[in-house]
Amino acid sequence: MKKLLFVYTIYCLFFYSISYGQVQVEKESLHISYDECEERDKIKDKGSIRFILCSESFLYKAENHSKAILPYNQIKDSLITVHEAKKKVKEYLEKVAKEFEKQAKNDFDKEITSYIKNPGTHYYNSYFNKVYVYVRENQEVGTLYEVSWEFYIE
Image 1 (tube, rainbow, N blue to C red):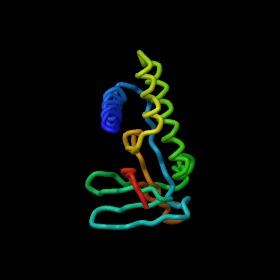
Image 2 (cartoon, rainbow, N blue to C red; image 1 turned 180 degrees about the vertical axis):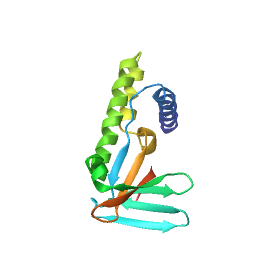
Image 3 (tube, one colour; image 1 turned 135 degrees about the horizontal axis):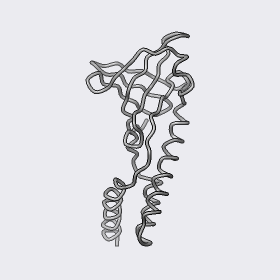
Image 4 (cartoon, rainbow, N blue to C red; image 1 turned 60 degrees about the vertical axis):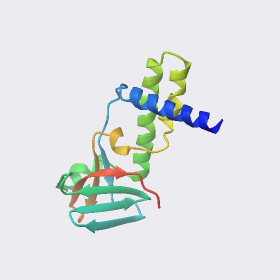
């Protein structure tokens, strides 16, 4: 019985991954404020910086990502917290599930929407156009890092 359940789960996830790519939902870019999270750490290594914000991990790699110096006034209206970013993940998955449900041809397809809304592991960067972390250097200016939002466990 366990083996049958395992095979069924793998089949559902395989079907979900094939079908999920066919659903089109507009993606946005996230600008996450480093300074808004009280539990934060910045770990620098050769050519990379790992930002740990409220138990989430964001990785900047110089060879893969961009960075820019920006005035705070230019970006302050688009900055969000990590908690708001997590809400945007949930909103995005809800939109995808709704679109998938519209295209569903039978009950089995509609059942897949629960996997879309609550995936076991999040692949955050595939949900958004780009993800950035903004670190204020002083009251007037800061650095905007393009990052990969990684699955992280404390």
